Length: 171
Length: 142
Image 1 (cartoon, chains in turn red, green):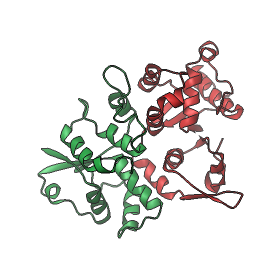
Image 2: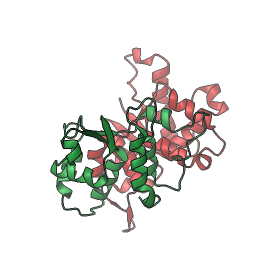
Image 3: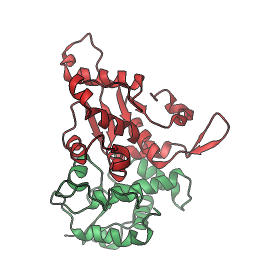
Image 4: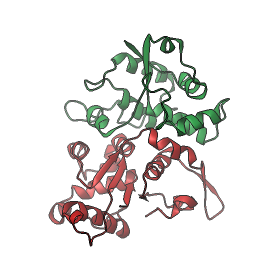
């Protein structure tokens, strides 16, 4: 049961595709901007499992959930026009929040995130020898994922691969 | 019973040294703060900004979910999905621009959403007003 946590940009693209005509027709994700082929394959596995009664099929490996922190939704609301770019409306954004699909979990920002947040480094050492600060927003997404038992992390910032203890979780 | 906003320095003192402010210790009122207040303190600790009680605070916050510290006296308003439903929008369905804007820090957006008075929350507007008064001068910096 592996979950997959999305950062704000990936969540924005997921919402855009979710409210796109193609998704309405096929009920599947396709590669689109930050929704890479690998991410799409994992997303579709999760949503098929939840929407096609595969939970009752012992031959299919159980899927987890697609997860985003409530904080990611706040980030979208703060830059709604820039992120939505008319791909989804405020009403659709609100509808998703009020009634997320069964394969999607909106994870609270609460005390459970704090131990992981405190354990994260302040800087990421890049391959070129330079250091890059690990910003609070990225740290909160990572901490949310680490606070779940088995959770992959879909983040936009590829330099986070330099954090050794999360590199095997990044997709 | 009255409820008030728990000041950032009071949060630090309580979670590091387990010293409650006098009015809380006497039972005359309860206090609330936002998860944003706690996250900001954790962020200062993560960045190594030294305080006299850094190690005690780290330990307290790392154990907060399972510890009974503060429970029943200090309410930490978490950011749940329901808070977004209740407080991120105006009654006409538009975004609540007090929080949904980039002129304040992301954590101040969270603070406003979590402490915004709402019929589903049992604290009064006083808590929100006290919080705003404290952060009015530092908006955009926190």
